[in-house]
Each structure stands twice: as structure tokens, then as C-alpha cells.
Image 1 (spheres, rainbow over the protein chains, first blue to last red):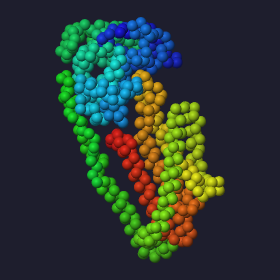
Image 2: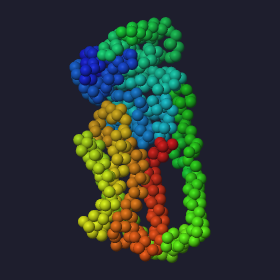
Image 3: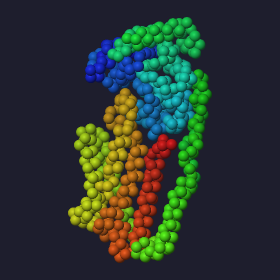
Image 4: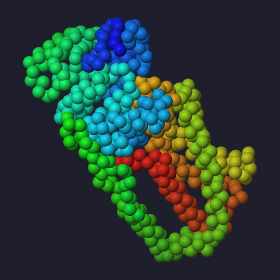
Length: 247
Length: 287
């Protein structure tokens, strides 16, 4: 399933936010989206997730218009509900889609092991650490079985140690399950570490200002951070972003 | 009574190899800071009440006040006990009126709040009316209710509903709108509509403020019942107080006041019990 984003344009009143955003995502590919703050990254995800109608442009799946069920959306906040157990939080998407409760729970439960949440099914979200909360939120997204995962700064609120551990973990499970991922991040290193390609958006109104391919073997481990190719990609992205903020 | 914490303690997870162990630790039971034992919570108000009663007893005795003006607390208890059958016979109708009136109030409050939550137009139309309804002077309306609807249940139920539906409706309306707009987006990305948003986010999210409102409303309900009976009834604590006042039995008036207070406190406590059954997660979340 190839995703094609073609010339998305969107303005909020007089304020243009997206100015012809176009890119492709191949099946199994990991693409990160970097951009200055407030450039419209989250708005782009809103359009993909079907929350906002674009003024112009299309989102296609293998040439056919994408529906809301194409993308699994994980917002910045974990949005785990205190009135549900961790397990029932992760089945929310399935319940909304009309899957029977028992089946939904069985499907979610299978993922608790790989997500490092085994034993916490009946806990309340407040009992989880920050990293676990993010993994529960990701599980809630993954279990919906959508084509593409939209991750909006999933590790933004974590401390740097947990964040590094989560990045390594994500690299590992993504390889295992073969997810197609679009990731919004502010963190250049995170983008390079996880991605096959990194798209840099211009300041608002957003366009794809640059595309950087990261040719590092997978699965990647922390050692890759010192690889010259890693440093080169990082430097190129930093340069582009700096150029962007000067505009 | 000990407040044992029945939250299940999760088994330790085996973290995936790439994760540091600290993220996979089972949740530690939180220390019960901020929730002292029942005795330690009840003792201070009881001591203060006993102290005040002691001062009252002493003052009335020393100043030799006539019991028609102000009886001693001991006399109030004594006479209250002596007339316990009559007091009980008048407490039952008051409880009944309170229950029916409060049930009506809950139904009206919920319907209004849900309707207002689904329709912005009705919100604009109804909320000012709700506020206006609270400016009605009950002291003037209650006797009119008797003229219009007689001495039966209806006028009393209306008075109680009128004084208590407002905190319930407002508590719910605010509770619903406290929902995180991003949670609504999440539900929509899952394919849910407005109903799913209400059912999965707004409704459960409103329960903490609903229970706060419920506690305020239930105490108003008892006061409302007494008041509606005071202006006219066949039986009930309100009319009993009015009769005893007219025969200068101040001690029995105060005994009835004491019963009213006990009823209010009991109903107030009951709301916590209901909360723990309906939404046990609130207690954890409030800590």
C-alpha cells in the first residue's frame, strides 16, 4: 500500500498553514517530518487523520482516495483515560469501531508483552511511568490495525534517558512488526536514528523544503550514532532547519 | 474501620531487552499521605461540637435562661428522646419528600445537561434561564405552591427540585465541557462521532464534578424539604417545627433541627458511597 500525499493546501481563515505539501510513503517505510515550531506539522497530521478537510489536494492509497481508516493517529498527549484500566484504554479504538469487547481485549492483550506492559493490564494509567504511558498509547494506536501510524511527537514529554530507551525500543518493534510510520518530531537525532527518510518542512505555510535519505543498515542500535553517515545526515538537517528559521 | 486499598497490584513485567528495568517496575503502592484514618478525620469536628455544646450548657445554666427561650442541649436531647416516636413519624414524610424531590431534580438536571451538551443553540437558549430560575425567591414561591397545588407531595417536590436541579445541571454541563478537545480528535480518528465522544470521553469525564454537585445539592434538598413543609404540610419535620414553635416548645424545635442535621450528614455521606460504587477511579484520581 503506497501512500501519496498530493498538493495539500489549507488555510485557517486568512492564515495559510499548508502550501502544497506533497510526498510519498512506501509500505514498511519510516518517514519523519521535521520542521520549525508552529509550521503546520500537527495540522498536516490532522488532515491525514481525517480531522480537518484540506482546501485543496488529495491523500491517496494505491491511487484511491484514503479513508479515515487508513491512518492510526497517536496524538502528542497520551490521552489515557483515568476511568479505564490500561487494557480498556488500549481497546478504545476497537470498541469505537464496534469490535466486541472480548475480542478487542484478546487482540490488545497479545501486544502487552512486546510493548513491555505485561502484568499492567488491570492497572490504572496513573500507575504507569511516562514511558509506559506512551507505549500504552502506541498500543492503542497499533491494535487498530491501520495502514500507517501517525505519531505526533510521541516522546516529546519524556526525560532524555527514557526517550533514548523508547527510540531503541521503537526501532526494534517496528522492525519486528513491519509498521509503516510517519513521525513528527523536533529532535533531529531521533529523526535520523529512526527514519528511512526525513522530510523538512518550511516555516508556515508549510511545504516540503527538503528530503534527506538516511542510508544506515537496520536494525539500528545506539552505536549508529557515531557513524559518519549519521553525522552527515544530522548536519544536513540542522543546516536546512537553520536556513529555514533565518527566513 | 481501616481503609484498605483494594487496587490490584500488578505483577512485575518482563521488560523487552532494550528497555531499562526501571520503566517496567510494578506500580508501587502509594503511601496513604493525605488520607488519615477515619478516627483522625472524625475526631476534630466531634470535639469542636462537644466544646460548643458544653459552652451552651454552661451559659444557659449560669444565666438561668428560661427553656422557652433557650433550652440547654441536655434538655433538647432528653425531650427529643422522650418524643422520639413523634419525631420519627415526622422524619419519614420528610425523607420521602426529599427522595422524590431529589429524584425529580436529578432527572431534570441530567436531561437538561445532556440536551445542552449536544446542542449549542439550546445551550445559549437555556443556560440564562437556568440562572434566572435561581433568582426566584423561594421564600415567596413556596407558599404560592401550596395555594396552587395543595398540601400534598407535588408542591414540596417542586420546591426541592427548584432549589437542587441547578447545581446538578451546572456541575454536569461544566463537567462535560471539561473534556480535552484532543480526546475528541482521538475519538474521531478512531471513526467515532459525537455520540462516541460523549459516551467514551465527556460522560465519564464529567463524573467527578457531578459528584461534587451532588453533595451540594443533597444538602440543599433536605433544607428545601423542611422549608416546603414549614409553609404547609400534614406531617414532616418542617411542619412539626412550626407547630412546636407556636406552642413555645423550643426544645422540640431544636430536637427536630438536630434530626435534620443528622439526616443531612447521612445523605452527604451516602454520596461518597455511591461514588465509590459508580466511579471508584475518582478516589484514586483525586489524590
